[in-house]
Image (cartoon, rainbow, N blue to C red; front, top):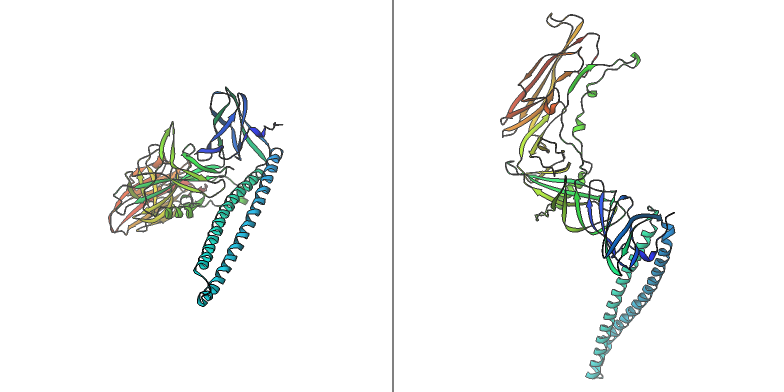
Length: 545
């Protein structure tokens, strides 16, 4: 059983033992504590109270600023009920004393209130009686002066006393609130054990020490959020702003701390649709009682998979409101730490454990942007406006709030920055370009101009995509599609005709994925045609078409 340390050596959470700095990673946080202690010469156990729910014991480190040497650093977890009883008893005694003092002060407040009421009644009486005596000539000027001086001095005395009592009550209430807060922490039900960090220090002399202790905790992290501003002509540079959305439920409040965020564990998201290979295969044998036709949806990704809605749109909208005022952008200071980077926030912050999420600004850049329109008709006929910028290792995937020509247009996500690929993000749907994709031919026959024997079947298919630029300006459209690829040697894809010819084949090194880069004039229409024949033995059931 863990031995209980002497409570005289315990440095409670508070002014002498506080969190001074926090580095937030994507799924945990590094806590830096600073404590003040007084020790005698010789071996002294310096014990720090911490309230973290999930502390990584292996990450514990300590530094002592003083003359002597550190003998050991260890983490102790002991049951609250075994350790907190003396503390709770002392807090209860303090609370009762403070409550008695408050009752005494409250009685004094009531007495002063009665004095003020008495003076008010005297003043009311004097207003009538003095007026009558002045009229009858029975009251001398000296007597009137004495009465007025008495009233003035009494009112001043009552006001001064009431003001002093009010300040005493405020200070007493604050002290009571602090004691009650310490009681709640001591009795907290969701943390049945007390976590202590014990630093064994061999002091060279009696001295005052400063301790720096660091440890990793879970239940904390940050997510990047971006705000993109694009001018209406799309020729100017892109204003690209990054924010850190920080959450923490570590069990410890971060009060007036120096804050950093780090990219040690990037978050992965995807936004724009990317078409994959179109595989054509022979259906696997299944019992006749359970045989079913495989729908095309079984081998093609659904549009919903490529147009995921953000889980927290409201938070992004709130972010825009917070940024509406024209103020200077407070950027964090960036530091490269080996293969990672960190952002040092410019001010100190307070983030409560289990409290509201906090969104803080990190940095702003103005990279060169390359703009084009993008569509994958086989998955989604919506046309997206896309911006590409040069790769930057500091941009992590995350939510993006997009503004175009000063107006909010979309909530989307920033893709991971892959090697040798530009950073691409979605600026929203452009409804000025209409796309329609339809199957214009789907014929099945057992002969093919006499050149195929009747033991085989041939399926002729043709897809037509019509793109209409309804805008009054020319655009560049990137259109992606996929062509059938047989993965069984008994299936043949023959006489493939593509008009016009695609700009790129094997996009992203994927078989059968093609891309057209089409310059579309204003108010013009472009047609894309894909036609092919699929030949296979008559007895085979083909899936994927």
